[in-house]
Length: 290
Ligand code: A3P
Image (cartoon, rainbow, N blue to C red; front, top):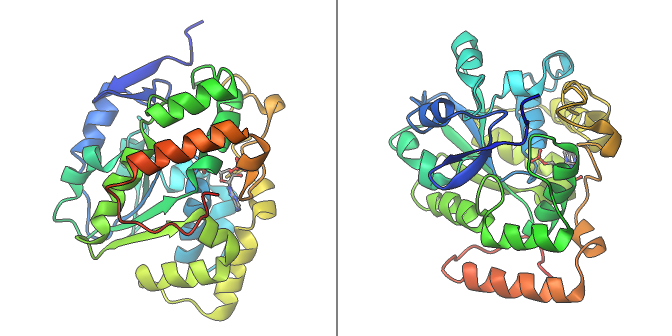
């Protein structure tokens, strides 16, 4: 049987070969965006699936029918994954919702001059790396996670699949100053005040919602609703691809889980790498690194 965890290298970044081909990656970086497109951008494990759910719900004014009948990858496909071309071609939506984990250095040229609305979701990298580590244990299309210290080192070096978190956030958030169709929102903000985050998104997407519609969105994209929705909890993915006996995609849905995983030394090292890699970045982060 062919191995599932073979990775595809594209511009020095590894991508799971189970979902990506050279052709699909090449097609993504030369994609012709429409001005009406909504692009959700994130480094893995930063709240991507949550944002897909929120945007779908908002476009249907809080009605969860689509969310409960169509898998997230079919309503907000990952641009760089091999099946997205067919999904996008078949789309009849006036506002296509597209997802990507590609760094700005790869996708930026295709977006240049486009009025597509870009939603960048980021998360405290300490929580993202812990979530990614657990995800590696269930996703058979990703390489062996190894021990947590080994995994953390790869994260800090930027050698995990999908590349460097630091390059990702710096590349995309550099667009805040130059693109007026760009919104940066964090996992932490969504967790702290979901109705507020939905209102902010609704204003950015020019999709006004009545208060009861906001309430309905909040209810359907809560962690417990999503955990129980098989269109978004990835239990539709066969066992050989995601081993559901080893954990669930909707794992904890919290902030600060890194504290259960990092040793004091790892934390200190993380902080020093973070400081040095982010010194040229003027961003203020809502999450607390401490
Ligand atoms: P944890 O592993 O920390 O629980 P992505 O979709 O980018 O892969 O991110 C997955 C992470 O988002 C997982 O984090 C998952 O539990 C969390 N998540 C998904 N939906 C959520 C929700 N409605 N509320 C809070 N966290 C959510």
